[in-house]
Image (cartoon, rainbow, N blue to C red; front, side, top):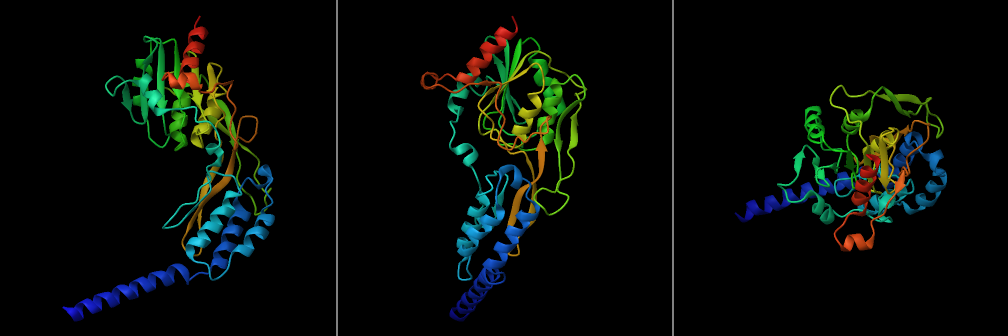
Length: 338
């Protein structure tokens, strides 16, 4: 037994040594630093728009890389370098950590409270839920209310039919996407198409045509067709805050073009670059914005979209358990129906 235990310990030691060698020795910190900088230099899409001098970034971070640093130190340096891009779509992904840039919302008021939201949704048996959507009527059945917290959670056309039929006697509709960090564009388009009466130009997209920072294709138009299912033509308010990002930002950009829709709340978080994935020599993944998506005026929305009406959560309302944005939206929709 003692001899068997010795061989087990020896085998474990060899395996651990092999893993450590594979992680730290096979590819040098310098090689991975150079690879990451070059990938971003050739394929990242917002250098000129954000006025980032990527060569200057290289000159500052390169001296921090040395062959004696371990993988954790290397990860920290590379993650800090990527933060210079100010991009929530850009992440370095290893087996032990994921770098992230969250300053696009961290220094802004939340304008949202899940506890206060529950005062409007009610108990679990007082609201409906299907897919990623929670919904019910407010103000004695006169206003429809939808909360959709993530476009990563799917919703089908038949489910949307039931939701819009449920609101058939309402004077207006609130679509609350606060805290929605994005997800799948098809989910946001499926909802946005319910408010269109005709095929509509909703934006543009570009792709890189070369390795230069300014080498892009001409903007390709992006159209959205109206759904062939139930439509909503009455007034709509879309509630937003800084945590509306990526697909949620794209949803707001499309909905803002519709005449019956009012965007209300705070500026969205942005995130208009279409993500792409690559890999470093040591196996770490890199995700970054590669294709810029533009609005209908060919303008960037990477840094967010201003609401039609800026509304902030007040301290007094919060203390009383009232959601300032929902209350303001209700009053707006009631006055729109007069």
